[in-house]
Length: 66
Image (cartoon, one colour):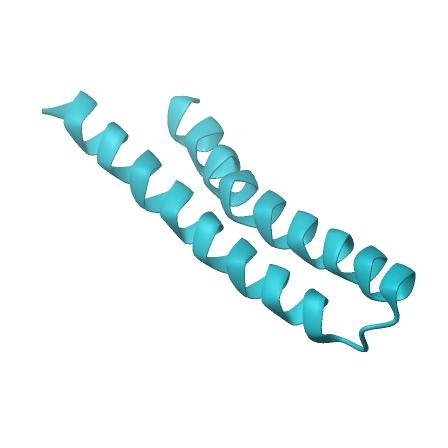
């Protein structure tokens, strides 16, 4: 059961920053008429943040299992 919850948490740790970056970027692009520039920047930052979250979570699980 714990491994299943860990896998779900892993997916959310990656998906939420990416989705939030894309949605916020799209909103800001529409508000300030900047084309797709802000969306791409925030999407890229969301991907970086998501992968950092995943790495941190995996390290925490590895340390717990030792």
